[in-house]
Image (tube, rainbow, N blue to C red; front, top):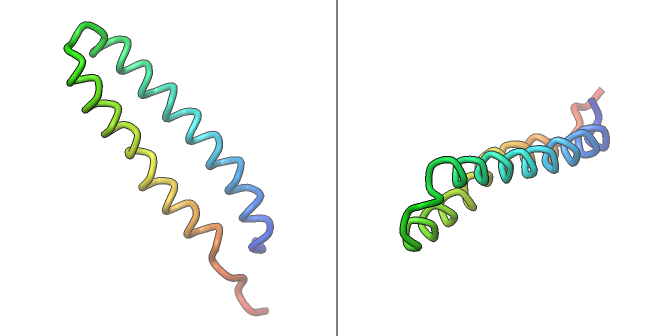
Length: 70
């Protein structure tokens, strides 16, 4: 797969994973944390906000990998 194809596919995967992560984080909030104090909400959203970074870094590293010489 060429780098340009990886970038195209990776862009869609990245956008989908961000939307999926936001839906999952919101669902967890609504089901588990809705009635807890404000400081729990802030802590949760700070942690959940950074939770998508690791998968995104892996995906971006894959997208940026140079083409193999033929």
